[in-house]
Length: 136
Image (cartoon, rainbow, N blue to C red; front, side, top):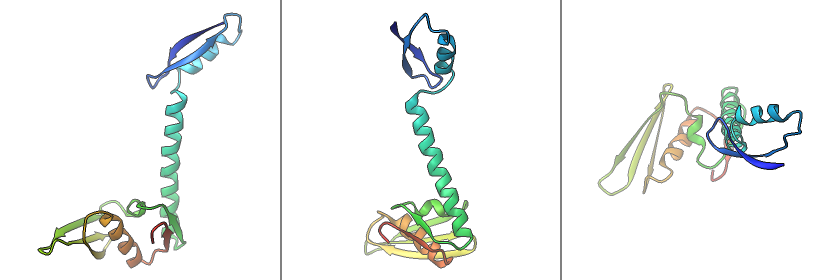
């Protein structure tokens, strides 16, 4: 038996312990070369999991149930077409306004850090959403 390097569909190289006497050898090679490597499959699963989590959170929000989100994830609950406007004031502070689905909210902060999240929280609160999570 010797180790050979095969190329997965993602383009990464995958090590394969080749045993010419293995009756399933070609099927194993076809499986490795016919799909992405383990790292790419795991990363894709994480992304799909996060998307499903946010979709489930949107459904819970729409039905009036409490939603738990991670820090800075509030903005992902906003609907498509959301508009955020930021204006720097003469005193150096920032004023922001968010509008979506006929609801508007405003916030003021000393800097831009977390301004989108702050506006999203205000908009969700104005809609009566029950959102809980980190840094509330």
